Amino acid sequence: MGASRSSGTTDELGPDEDSGGGSPGCSVDPGPPADDGGIPGEPPGSELLAALLDGMDAALCAFDAAGTVTHWNREAERVLGWTAREAVGRTGFAGWAVRRADADEVRARLMSAMDAPGRQVHEFALLRKDGGRVLVRTQSAGVRGADGQPAGVYCAFSEVHAQIDLERAIALSEALLEDASWGVVLVDVDLRPTVVNAYAARALGGGRAALLGRPLGELVVQGVEELEAALHHVLAEGAPSAPAELWVTLRTAEGERRRCWRSGFLRLASPLTEEPVPLGVGWLFRDVTAAKLAEQEADRLRFRTSQLHRAARTASECEDPMEAATSLLDFALAGFADHVLVDLVAGERLVRTAATPFDAPGPCLPVSGGAIPARYGPGHPALRSVERTGTVRTSAGTGDAAQSWASERRWPRDAAHALCAVLRSRGRTLGVLTFLRAANRSAFERPDAAYAETVAARVAGAVDLARATAGT
Image 1 (cartoon, rainbow, N blue to C red):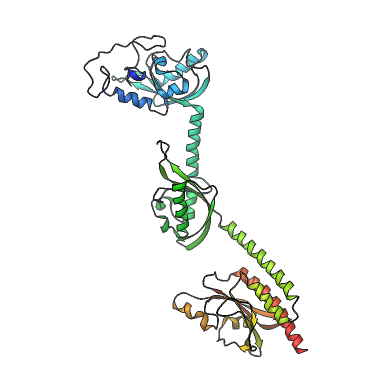
Image 2: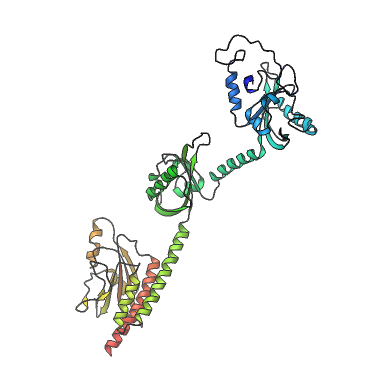
């Protein structure tokens, strides 16, 4: 425990005499000059030991077996204000670093560590040089001499609030990386996960250990470019001011899953260097897929309701019922489909009565030159819809068959998804509506079928009225 006297510490555990606060006298044979560049007469390595003690982040002091202060580092001076020259050589803390009323108890608790195994933790109220009091938490342990006998005690201490802040930080880190109800992933500067908590492991579809060190591209099928761009930005510029919502597609044992993660990012830098050295990024996220899908569905329903309202008002101003029907379909198409076909029943056949252009977007208009037979083969979705008096959804497959799928069904070449809704009015089947989407859009789903049926009911009413007025 000896340290250089140039830093205010003595060379042995305990001085030869107590000077009551000044530097103690010490009888040391100067000996030959040290070979390690230290001060002549100092034990080899004492300069290094002094530097180590003064460079510690924790305050440290030591006592010999008689309770005399033998070591006092710079952090102890910072916390209490007493310099090493003022502290080393004093007997205990009585009268200077602790109130006399508490001195005996503090001394007994500190010196008890000399005979006890392991470390002891205590909290004391110590006195600063300026007279203020500071609550410290100490860790003390005994020191053994060369003969194995108790030779003194060393004590490391820090202000309680600083210790509590450190413990809170450690507890927070452990809680985030274990029990947090959101995902926590620490990635290094190469954007490879180094720590993954339980929530994140479940979200990413793997075990915590299995995910470590793997490129994010192996876990995320789509959306990895946006995620990596966000991580690179944090490393270069720092954390963004607000969370970001990232849509990704994951590769799992059950297949691909599309998820939405509300993500926040923190740049991690080493606290041990003068200039911040990036260690990586802390990525915190929560799966909000269900909420986002519900929000999108609510927006979609709100828009479609508005479109139906506008369509009804426009149709009510049309003198020609068939014009009202095509106006209804123009409003219905917005945001819903790319093409629509109107095939009406004429005897045993379906005839094309109105349609949008095949080669470009446009309004739904009556077929020029009058209705023409629809050349649908057996099993065609429009014929199945009429036979079932219900709705039929279908989509093109993959590969070469998808290229000829639309032409075989007499639909526009870019069609990849179809929904056929039957036209019914007064208990009779009048025809069928066919909505078509291109390959760059998603397939029709059950909520789309309900909307198509609502539109078909209104169009069927207009078609029925057109036929009734034509017959009169």
